[in-house]
Each structure stands twice: as structure tokens, then as C-alpha cells.
Length: 256
Image (cartoon, rainbow, N blue to C red; front, side, top):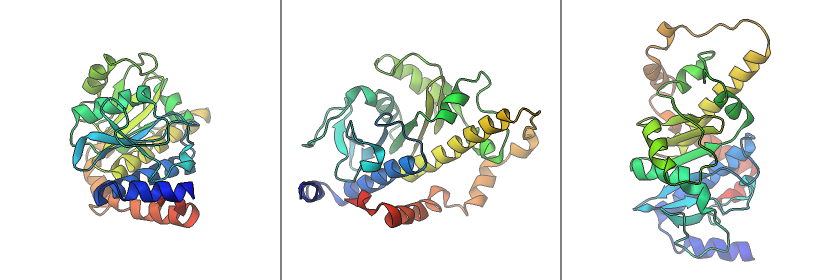
């Protein structure tokens, strides 16, 4: 009964556009858990509230990603402080990385950050992501790097992180993990899917112990156009509806 009351309370207090963003963001959290990219209650995915450029949605601190629903997401300001009544805790310190990107890139609607074993393993390698797979061809397109400065708690790191990211939509945080962003939740998620896949393939290939064959530079010269053709020009919009259908079959309560 309490959950139903929370859903009704939030749904009637936000715009249709915000509710749709909440549904998409809750879906992203569930999908991260589904694919095994979560790190208990840690890391975050954030989304800008439509029509409110200085307000953002983020996970309630202490909830597992497979528990998150549209109504349980916490709405915060650019300091990570709640702006809508919520029974849940929020972790302002965890919003440092996300607020840096959102403030510097107003076109970005969603920022995703993970601590996956494969992502962290590649982030610890001096050469970073290698051109070992088709997935890596796409992931290396505009890929940025940011050196480790400790747990992301300090405001002064934001400027350096933003400078390293530049106009890219994907970044490897050295000794830390992966970050992607996009104009929609679906964009950030599919970019992460490709980057995570490339990292996983790299670690598996390296573990084989044999000499590795890299993708020739000539084959990756027009990778952007290849990506456009492969998705029929729809980008993340091609796979995202299918991922939502999967969630509706196995975890439909993400929409609550």
C-alpha cells in the first residue's frame, strides 16, 4: 500500500515529460543490474529533468539497482540536494561526477557511471582500450580518459574531469571505471553497452595468452558512418524499445 501511495503521489506531482524520463531512468538502472554491471548500491545514473535544466533524477541511496522504480528516483538540484519530498536517502557526494558533466554539457540528458570488473581492469592498463574488436572500433571513437584523483568527492576535480571529457560521450576513468553520457537515457545506455562489451572482450582476449590481432587503422576510418548504417540511422532508438519490452516481461514493476 505504501508503494502505491508513493507512485500516486509522485505521478500526480510531476509533468508527463518528467514521468517518462523517470520510467526510462528506472529502466536503465534495472538493465544495469540485469547485465551485471551494478556495484551493490554504489555508482549512479543521472538524468536531467525535462523543462528544469538545474534539476536531476538520481537513485535513492541504499537501494539496489534492481529495486529502483520510476517513483522512487530522487529529484535533486545541482548540489545533489532533494527538491521534492522523498522518504529515501540521497548521497550528494556521489553526484560530483554527474553534476560536472551536466553543468558543462547542457545538451546532455543522462550520465552513466559504472565500476564493472572489466571496465576497471581496462582502466588500469596504460594503453587503455585497444583496437581488438568491432565493439572497440565504435567505443574508441572519441574516447576520452581522466586520471584517478581519489574518490570523487572534491569540487575542484570537476573542472579537470570536464576538460578531459571535452565533447566526447564516453570516457575511461583511470583506475576507477567507465562513464558515458547522451542526449537521452537510451543513448547513454547503448554507449555504455558498447564500451563495456569492448572492455570485456579485451580482458578475455588478453587472458588467452596468444598474440593478438588488432583492427587495422584503415578499417576504422569511417566507423561513424558504419555505425549509422548498422542502426538504420536510428541510433539507440533501434534497440531501446526492445530492451524495454524485455523488462516488461521480467520486471514490469520498474514503471511503478
